[in-house]
Figure 1 (cartoon, helix red, strand yellow):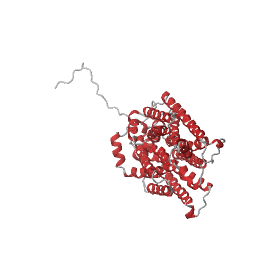
Figure 2 (tube, rainbow, N blue to C red; figure 1 turned 30 degrees about the vertical axis):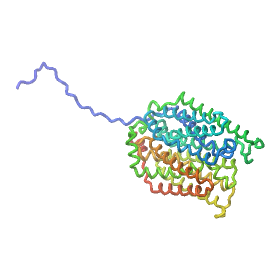
Figure 3 (cartoon, rainbow, N blue to C red; figure 1 turned 90 degrees about the horizontal axis):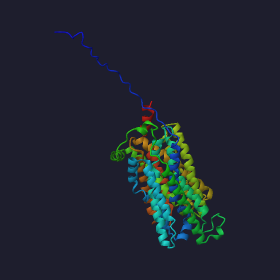
Figure 4 (cartoon, helix red, strand yellow; figure 1 turned 180 degrees about the vertical axis):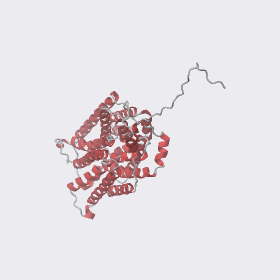
Amino acid sequence: AAGPSPSAPAVPVPVPVPVRRLAPAAGRVYGRRWLVLLLFSLLGFAQGLLWNTWGPIQNSARLAFGFSGWDIALLVFWGPIGFAPCFFFMWLMDKKGLRVTVLLTSSLMVLGAGLRCVPVSDLEIRKKLIHGGQLLNGLAGPTVMNAAPFLSTTWFSPDERATATAIASLLNYLGAAGAFLVGPLVVPSPNGTSHHLLVSQSNTEHIKDRIEAVLYAEFGMVSLIFSAALAYFPSRPPFPPSVAAASQRLSYRRSFCRLLSNFRFLMIALAYAIPLGVFSGWSGVLDLILTPVHVSQVDAGWIGFWSIVGGCVVGIAMARFADFIRGMLKFILLLLLSGATLASTWFTLTCLTSVTHLPLTTATLYTSCILLGIFLNSSVPIFFELFVETVYPVPEGITCGVVTFLSNVFMGVLLFFLTFYHTEFSWFNWCLPGSCLLGLLLILCFRESYDRLYLDVVVSV
């Protein structure tokens, strides 16, 4: 056979070149993440403040607006009722992002706060407007209570996530604490127990004017936060801060199937929902519970205030510790729930002084209630981080939405019974140590895993 022509050009044979697999680029964080965190945290603070407006001043509100005990319980009850469309807000956050969800949430809060301020002379219409305003504020609950882990994953690096989650989630509780402080100090008590300088003028009209001043101030604050979010609140940064933030998540339907079929997730979901749901309902009517043991409206307000503030401070400190020493979430929760069980048992036995003969003093009530609030409130961000780690790659908003929905179901059931059995509260107090002990046992049996952390630490190396 004839060989190739000497004049024919040689055809170059392509030589395969090995392609080096590049490791994922390190995430990038932006200074504006703190502004986003601040706006979201302020929104959560305002929502908690509006939700807890009436509990700390329930005696004054009864006199000024003719509220009954059932009305006071219902005003608190609108919080868990507002979680009925929780899954819609989770879907909206998953599909449209944080900006759309936050703007819808803040607009509902502005409308609700405005309804409470409508100057109507007819007390029955005024009460209905106030109830309507509390419901609209309750509808903001799913976003401010669920979106913290989603925000921290979207904007913050892995060594800042737990801290950001703690700040964003606990500021809602701090708002509720602010109501314990603002309400009793601004609004005089009808029974003369207030330390306010104008206590001698505590007639009905004066008390009503002071309550309306609080309502107008809260409306102004919510409107200012809404305006700031409207001006600047981006859904996400230009580049993700971590591998986990950039990774693909499960669809809405597959996420629910994964959650409901994951026995380990259901264990920790109940460990969170039962004690935190019971404690939230108990805190909302703390003044009502402490009145039979002759605790004034102001003292009840201070007890509620310091219990939540202490929980927020310890919660942020615990989250910072969890950021530095990873893989310790279960251990931290065991410590916190053990302390909550002991503190709630102490409070309940103290209130049964005729049976237990334990000293019933202001100091013992302050100490037991504050310790209980510190242990339970500080566990919230730790629980949230453990939820996300356990079921990753289920989106953070859906995961936390399911557990907070469960928590509000338990809170709603408890407050529902309170509307019928509000003459004696020993059964309500016993629910606290029982729920904390059950949560402790569930966490003790739980096997922890850190799937999201593994992705960030190993894959990004």
